[in-house]
Image (cartoon, rainbow, N blue to C red; front, side):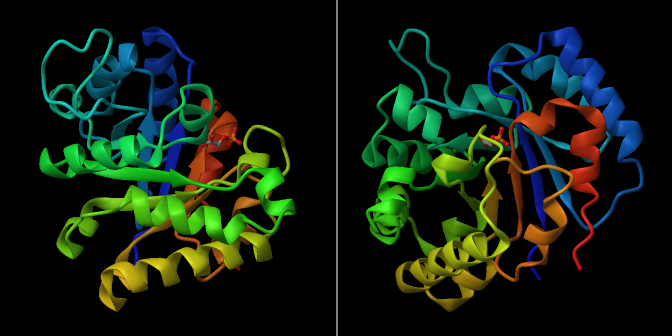
Length: 252
Ligand code: PGA
C-alpha cells in the first residue's frame, strides 16, 4: 500500500549541463518503469534546468534544503515557495550533513517542515544516529528525539506529505551499508514512533526510506524488508546506470 520511493540526493555535484545529461540518461533507462516514485535532488542552480529536462517524464524534482520563511531579509536563503516555483515537489530537510556541518537543530528543522507543509511541498525528513551514538546504545533515543521534535505540531493529515529517511550517519558516503536486519530494526522502531505520535493509519501509510551507501548490489535486500519503503541515494545517484538499477530494485 505504500508506493516505494527512490530519491537521488546529488549534494554539491553537477553543473546545469551535467544535470541535463544525467536526467536524459535516466529518462531513457527508466522509461516505462511503474510502481515506484523516482525523485532527483540537484543543487539549487540546476533546478530550473532539471525541471525542464524532467518535464513529462514522471520523475519528480526535489531540493536539498530550504529556509522556513517565505520571503524577507535572509541573504543567501531560498524559501519553499521559490522552490515550488522552480518545479520542486519535495524538499529534503534535516540531512546529517546539514545537522553536522551547519549546526541545524531539530527545532530549526521542524520550522522547515511546517513551512513546507504550509506551502504544499512534500518533505523528506532525514534522521539517523552517529556511530558514537549507536555504540553508546543511544540510537533509539536519538531517533525518538529526531522524529518527535522534527515532526512536532503536525496534524495527522499533514503527514500525507511527509516521507522519513533513516540514514545512519556511519553509513553515509562510507561504503558501509546497514545490514538488512539493522535497517529493518530501525525502520520498525521509527514506524512505532509514528504510531505513538500520529496513530496507526499514519504509521501504516508513511514511507520510510533507507539511506547510506545504497548501491545496485544491496538495494534488493534492503527493499525486501517489510518496513523499508525506498532509498535515499547519494553517491550512486550521480551515475545513470547505478541509479537506474536502484530504481529498478528487485525485492526477493
Ligand atoms: P550515500 O549518501 O549514498 O553517498 O551514502 C546518502 C545520503 O547522504 O543521502
